[in-house]
Image (tube, rainbow, N blue to C red; front, side, top):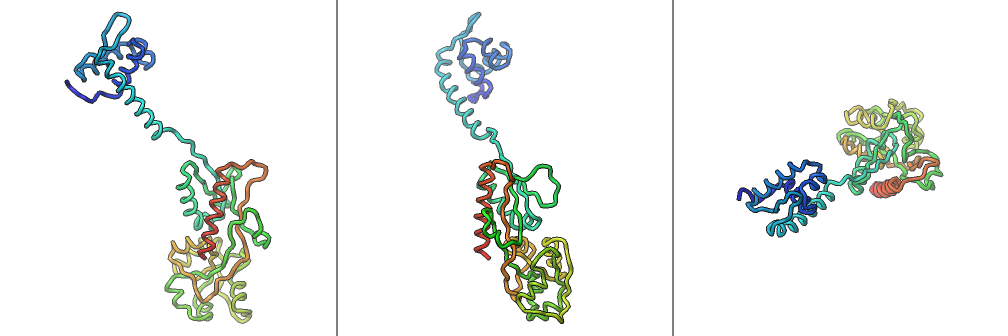
Length: 297
């Protein structure tokens, strides 16, 4: 006997020929020639060292050994096909487009989306930053607004608190408000309601005789990167910017108290479009993650 491990293709050919009792009909089913089927059967018989078929001009019949072998082959092929179906069947992956601000997309969302996709392997979330041209409307958007009524919005996501962020070695040098105002450039964003002037006034009162060294930048991520390079201090909006601040090695300055609001993030669904179950699933996951982040502040 030359081998006790027949090839899978030989077994398929044997099973088809046994069912049809014909090499020709087996060949039609397998998209082969009758001669190729005959060669495969002969190779299997040579491998096993036993004849499997009695050959007649117009039909073939199983030998005793072939009849004994057939049930084992059929069970084996069924097991292989079933396992292959489970392992390699194509599963449809559903995609969701989520629109968010640059800060959200670069800081809070990456870990949240990674956890969501891990728990939902058949859903993929494509995050698109505001301002990036895209033809289709997003399936879901994270918006920001200063209006107090947004805390009652059905899609409310999270509020914010304002903190001062700096490198650990810079924060350690701040023993007084004078240290902060005289030693560092203060990066600010023009559109924010709570900038440096408002934040310092809220916590320390009017400072009409103080000149603030404020520099306007385009985005909070840019401000935080500049702070991480020792160029000054910036206002961070917690909890949304906390992951980015940690990644850059920044610390909260305890000299300036954490100051709540104004401003709220909320989820906005497209108007006039029936919402898919996967999108609602993502919405619930975002709100649950936001609650965890808010409690950790």
